[in-house]
Length: 159
Image (cartoon, rainbow, N blue to C red; front, side, top):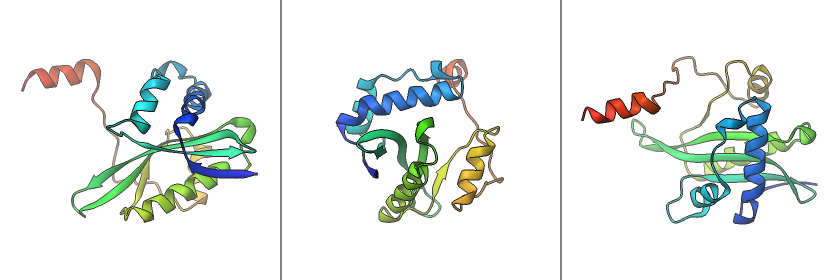
């Protein structure tokens, strides 16, 4: 039986396992450098950084949705940002991904969010189709930009 629920501290090892699996799926496991302790602190510590929902099949965690709240100042309303949604390969087709997405849509409404945002890899056509089937649309008005590492330090040093 499929169940969707807010994650608890006891789920941190499974969340970490699924993040590593997500990284392996994209041949980017080395990108997953966060520890279980860091995840615990971010999701359940004093200074919360985000939230998690899990999908469980027969009490086994098979999927995660990691998200946080941001804010649109033009509208003066919160926005739910879905950072990661991943379902273990053997559990795909179980409805876990759709159920997690539905739970986050309900969370966004409960928190009076203006909308829900997420990013999809440009080459991930299957995921684009998944989101489109559930009403998601591509926002071609914006490109994701990033600054990290040496560029971030260089800019900060020129205060």
